[in-house]
Image (cartoon, rainbow, N blue to C red; front, side, top):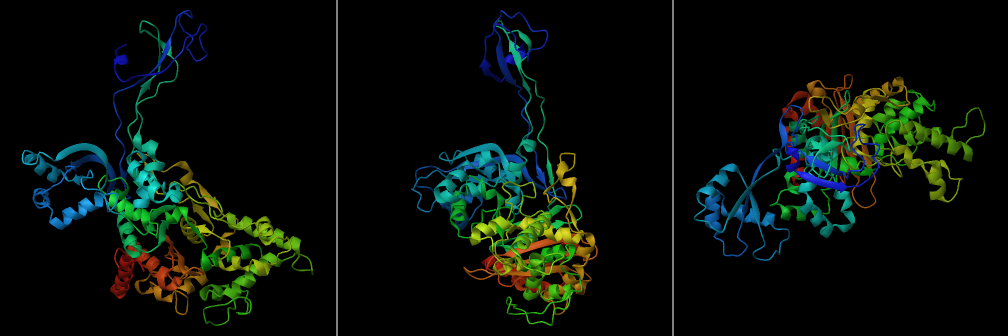
Length: 600
């Protein structure tokens, strides 16, 4: 058999007198010794590309040219810069970026990536530069400077990064293993080499197979849900600040933009000449390498009032016309506003005492009894509240196609029994749930999906980043419609309040898009932070009556949600729906982008 001379890999050898059950019926003489072999066929599949929703190539396997500088100085950097067409400042920066630490010893091996044109110039002058070494290989190449946390990296090309991570952030090393779509879909992108599994005698003759053969399969392309232009715009709004922005199409669950900030370029992790840049990323206090929308769960703040209101409506604790006093003795309310005489007003003004009393009705309610606030009732009601809230995809991983998704957290009665050291805890000790604080933690993906659920009046498709694998569609689970336990009528009852939030007198009226004919439904949140400035949050969708985009924004230490998070969400909605930003908001846009560049 001629194939035995090509890529022949001996897996195991076994001698036996009785043929095994996996040998075909025409098994040969059992007195002969046979050898199991595994033959890998020579054709190597090409790794698939990654493209955005408009078929722009974002990642592909292409030739990479590396110029290795001599280990021993001196090096005429001026002449080398002229050879490459770089200025002296550019050359010095490129060399500094390639060093793994600032005090690297003289002569530390440095490799610089070149373009094809630069490599051609080096080849032409090779006789004049005998100390330079130019090599060519095929490597994953990023054609975009955005979407680092989405695109990820091939583990095989990230060994240098892993080694640096171990050295700089030992305790956080495993959190940094976020290989994005490159890792999640690695098998599909890689394809499969063909293999044969012959059973061979001592003369090299084949007698059946000891295992099923596998057929060759080319690596498949991934067509993403991302709009790379919208992604780039959203990254400009967050820049060096800490936080996230997730925008998705609520009708399909397709993620349109996915920003984890501080941002960095996707090539940074695997590029052989960016070790110095990686070192700085690993040492930054902002931890830019953490994939915040998937891996970080935070208290959602007042945006969670939407969920509590929907559950309270479903369980009959309130109706849309229920009003409560803005009683500051219960909990402080930072907004001065008219009395919240109904749910719409409670949402419009984000009245903390209003929602304190909404949640109190849920936790303390005892049906058909004059006795209120019993231990048993509190436990049963909290468990029931949690059951309904979990149907929003909370307190569990959504199943998004990105690695290391966190589940978030919703407290149980048993949790409070242990935390309080007694089963006789009262609502007053857990009231922070009513305003999205305390023990509640949601991820950015869950926040965006929460907005999509309200936009859809109670259902959602699992958010996902790949709309088609090869010539097919997304993974099957992303086409399954999922429903909450709350009726659609109760989600509809939230809409007037969410629209009022964006109108005159609402907490986010400055972020209205009514001037261009877009009605936004939204909810602001300001998350208390004992260790610094409060965090800013916002969720919303537009157009309100025909939602095409749902957005969640969270900016750590950003202050009020209305001031920091809502404007970012509104600009992304406008950019997606209109393609441009109205002149009225250009100065506003420039101010936000400036803050993003400076990280405050």
